[in-house]
Amino acid sequence: MDWFTASDYWLTRLVFQRALAAVYLVAFLTAALQFRALLGERGMLPVPRFVARVPFRQAPSLFQLHYSDRFFAGCAWTGCAVSVALLAGLDGLLPLWGGMLLWLVPWLLYLSIVNVGQTWYSFGWESLLLEVGFLAVLLGNDEVAPPVVVLFLLRWVLFRVEFGAGLIKMRGDACWRKLTCLDHHHETQPMPGPLSWFFHHLPRPLHRVEVAANHFTQLVVPVLLFTPQPVATAAAALMVVTQLWLVLSGNFSWLNWITIVLALSAIRFPANPPSSVPDAPLWYVAPVLAVAALLLILSYQPVRNMVSRRQVMNRSFDPLHLVNTYGAFGSVSRVRYEVVVEGTADATPREDSEWREYEFKGKPGDPRRWPRQFAPYHLRLDWLMWFAALSPAYAGAWFGALVERLLEEDRNTLKLLRRSPFPPGDPPRHIRARLFRYRFTTWRELRETGACWERSYVREFLPPTRLSGTGPHRP
Image 1 (cartoon, rainbow, N blue to C red):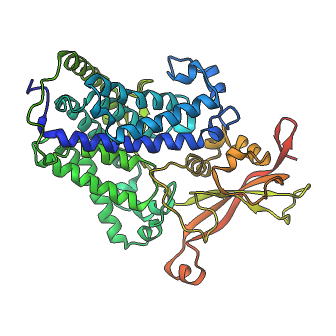
Image 2 (cartoon, rainbow, N blue to C red):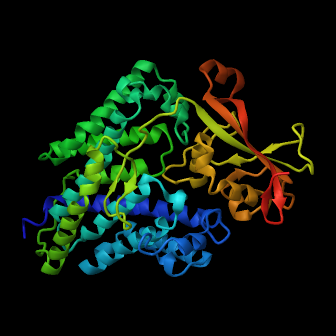
Image 3 (cartoon, rainbow, N blue to C red):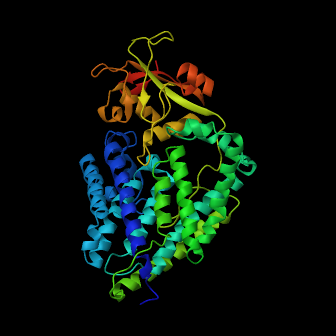
């Protein structure tokens, strides 16, 4: 069935699958190390409470059938183990059906996590990993050449990711049309990286070039993915270069990396396929074509959203996250705000009490502490703290629980932080939160103070709060 497969994409499939397995590994590792404080039985947004009010049909998940912290940990670490096996190429040692089932396991496990993850898992790259991971199930292994229709669907996903992101920018903040958004973005992005300070201080004309290049890569280049080779390869390679530039400029979890993985699926790597490859069996061809047709039908809603003047970002249109819509930074903040959480051991809190600051791993805190590179690992609490600084409404569901866990000196919650200012066994009596405005220092300020940030107090975010018999209580 020469019409069904593309033997010259043999190495392309291999590179794509191994890279995707690496992203899966990071995603499951993130879940395994952070879930207890975020989603566990004593978490800020407990899974048992969620599944008690949301039916299975709206959020299909293994955890709808049973939940315990031990079971969740088992699923997350199983996902890690299967990802390592796929990274090592175990799927190629199995029969075709066995390789497909092996790729189905991480998809099912991660779908179960995302569908009960609530606001902690509300990011576009969660759905993107699931959509791409489902297509990986259909790609087969060394027993057959890669199906043409699945390679096309991978390009279709990449097109929607990039073109949708380009459209949301052109329809959104006027600074994208004026080419001025990067005058602010590197400073106000959710989690700056170690080079963000330098990117922010690039000459403004170069920022204009960056924005223009971004528009070209997201609005023109994606169309070239559907042209003959080697044009499609050149287009995908340009996308890879653009994503690596974004990797250097900030911490965006695995968004850039999963986009790179998608782009790799469109690059035809030079390689000689095996001399004799059997035709794809009918039991494989028929389901692949049927599922491909279903996915194209389901694409109607994302396409309708993409062409709509009221385009929305990062939305899933089905509970299995098979086909989704994407986009990022339709608007760009001009000012950076950060919520600073502090505690005191004083029985009666006063302004002149000794307030000690909690340090987070990734989000800005101490002005002298330089940002670190965490991506593709995702610091979920740090990201949500950025949203909380934009508006207290984003923090309504979980911030009170965070304060309660800090007052209780909850070990799992403290593991999410870089440092607690209180010694073990001696938690604070009160906690407060204050909102500060942050900005990158200038070259001169950096030389004089050694600080990469300058911050100024804005207002109170949460007044001093203590534990009562039922939880946090404001005296």
